[in-house]
Image (cartoon, rainbow, N blue to C red):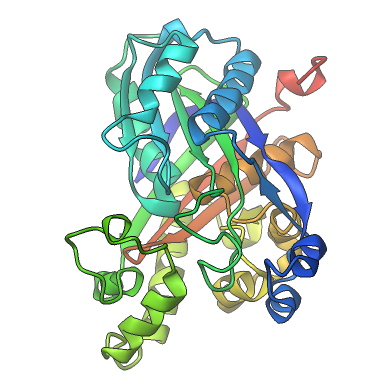
Length: 347
């Protein structure tokens, strides 16, 4: 979908402390051969700082940069991947309370690692009917320091990192603009992330840890992969990229950087290699110092690109993600100006 007039006013990021991968290997937490294959340098680990607290910290940075009070928000969209607190409780309400955003229409986004793209699409429609001058806050946060999974081994080719990222969007012109958002789902592979696990009762109830590697193996053993499924994924991925670029009116060679899920080197090369995109045009090197922070990866990377001066006025960033479903999503963002907050003390 085309999203002209969906402007970015600020980003905000808050990450856990970096733990060197070499330390994890020495401690026996991570396999040496896997570390060599993925080439992660460090992983963000937040310890006992909860995901909602990470979300609040990132949101405060974004709102301060945008000079937008929480009381003026029309919408708050909260994306997460893992458990964010007590069952039956809504983490976005905690963020509302901390930001004095009780009048905003708030909701949770459950789209796995692609939650931010869904939030962008929802924000585009929501802001078209919001009162003039109102803003929407998008925030994604996760802490994978949990006995319910092993961050180092639960997802082949990835290591889960802890952090949060926020975006302030509005219809008032800002330093950047979301030009398009698109998604597609390869429903034939829905069972890939489910394996042979029952829909009820849940794994947590049964005392099972999250282990996507085991589920992938179960799916394969049951004959879940159809002939040519790998090629079909590549085709659908390329089709999504073509669509989101076409709707933005931009060609791939006009993209300054591509922000993809913070996967290991092999994962990123497998996904983007067929497009003819070298690692140097991606944010992989930066992402390899953080790990896969759920739905926050692309915004964390965008914030880094801005802060490091890697991108500037006139540049386009292509954000891409793959998540359970199997869903593929993307967005194109154009930078119109240098954010004013980059030169402000403390930002």
